[in-house]
Image 1 (cartoon, rainbow, N blue to C red):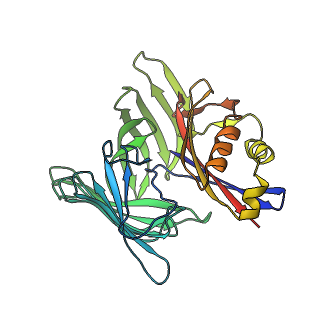
Image 2: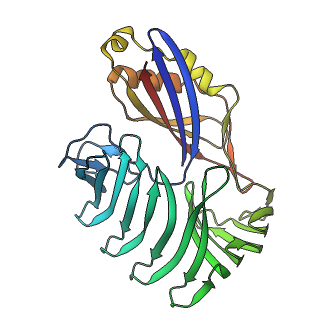
Image 3: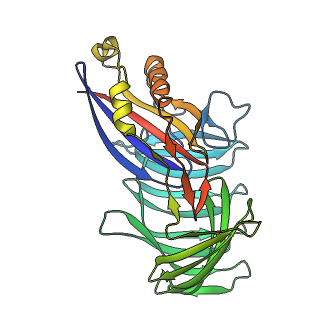
Length: 328
């Protein structure tokens, strides 16, 4: 999932816009306002819903400490815990502290630490049987992003195929609306040589060549034998015009709401189809009905897109677009 962060700052009737872009492949969950012991329900995609009737998960706030850090428990709808973790900013979904995720049977799935929204340090993953699966470290890079370095990996038979970053490593990953299995050699925690993989739903296969963890080239072969060559795993959709300028210049912030100090974040979800058309524009949540409708209106103006690609193949991709409205 692509996560864009759009900030619109209001000063009287003047609109200023600042932008930062974050990319993450994770589930999206959030609440704009809460009090301890509230129960918040979510559907299978972690979109907040009002009723428990169609819910797959629910959330409870455990406590907020003196520093404003919020402890949260998420549950499967059957009452088994799904996650325990801490947020320095729950509204903006900034994870900060230790997180533990669980399988439906109650066993730990994986656990580790976040620092200001980024995974850091050692993370450990387990199979559903509770047998250890892998260990690895997230380390800070020069560009201030974090990168994962696998250390040890065990298959379901308990055989260790990766030892201290050397050997064969196996990955099962989500990839937009599909999932992928891939494997290949690791040397000193980095991909090296030929890696192979396959997509579960589409049946597409791929082969990639790495040197010192950098992709040199790759080829995807579809079920009809057609090949797609690439040198980037993912090319994200982009708007043919200045999307952020378009939203900023067309967003109409009612003066009455400015005078009343109504501000906050409007969360919008939209999807860019393989042909570049926009679909599935939805309001996730927002601070005021009028601002929510306005955010939907300006998002619908974004009609001209260059579609994204994954491993050389045109791919349907979804965005979470948080529009932050702030009165200065």
